[in-house]
Length: 113
Length: 115
Image (cartoon, rainbow over all chains, first blue to last red):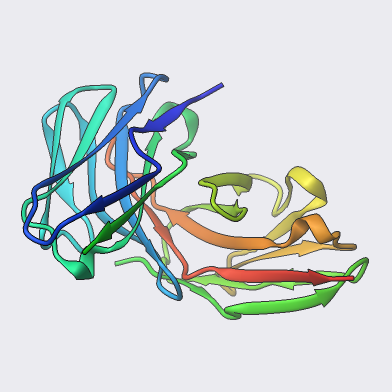
């Protein structure tokens, strides 16, 4: 089974902290994604990566950055956390060879206080 | 940019009734279409997908969807729902472009099945 693992299910951080959300996939997928999920807004794409060290901005990249140093790992970084970044964060991976079906992690619920 | 519209944010139904969750997308080029389900406190899992071929696609848990290119729709249906189908459902579209596809999601439809 494909597995996408997010390092934490729940996180509480203080305003202004630098926050790292980690995601690891075990299927050698080329594409990896970070989404943010908020009630009534669905899933909004923050960043995605289609290869190691490659990244592209999604629809809401402001306040976030990403890192992909290895194919299996995609990190989302909140440079200076703010209360409006309190949300559920979902990581996903996919491969063009598998018709872009995305596999999701369990999500990280981040609360910024 | 592509967009996905899920026409109903909430759909309440009684157990064993049929249900249709509606989805329209904006792209005029060939796309891949997906329906995902999210149970409470879980990530998303794939229900079904349309890549090409037959416009009627069957998925897991008795769900099916019909691709209609002229209406740019991909509505999800189930002839008889169960309490356990209570969840949030997301329609998504991906435009195949070599190695840089991205999935665009609708805002979701919360299906509540009542006894």
